[in-house]
Picture (cartoon, one colour):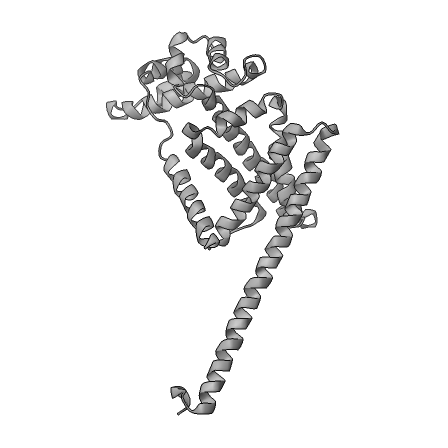
Length: 287
């Protein structure tokens, strides 16, 4: 029963994540203003892309996304003084020369800044791991075990949070808020999927869910440990992470052993039943 529950849970996570992929670039009432403001950043590149009136809606959405990204990028340095807040976003907008009308673009407030940073770090990790995989392809002697690769990937991603470690507990509170639940699942799902993909996992069965679920648990528990860690270079955090990964590795071996035992037992039972039927003459295939 527990396995069914886990599968159902991660099926819902996957569906939610996929659904979110189709809601990016959502319009707001300030879309027209955003499109006009984005021209000062796009310049000649934007002008050369204008082709027909039928593309105006797409350009509006694309322009708004571009402007929002610029503002959120500019807002990150202000997190140190204003936290993960609407005020930090407004400071970022003002730094780029935008008016107070930019306020209407971020209806979610500070959580939009958290999501932006989370996704930005996930994208950086994707690039870093892709480069490492290429290095191993060119130099096979550099290849490490899967557990070591995953450990380095988790550490790489968590180190990206250290710049804002003093306020990261507040960022997590916003990130896990009920109104941001689907986006939070998408963020962590994208993170663990990126790590497993570059680690070489290409599973399509139930293992796809269990591997990502276990890694998500390791990542989140290590992230919480990091918030309390006062050791040099977060050494206690990395030790904690390695212990959790070791536990997962042992669990995986146990599961494989149990699966093998179940299969062997089933085959043994089946063979015994066939032998019994043959002895008493009830096996149709032997008549």
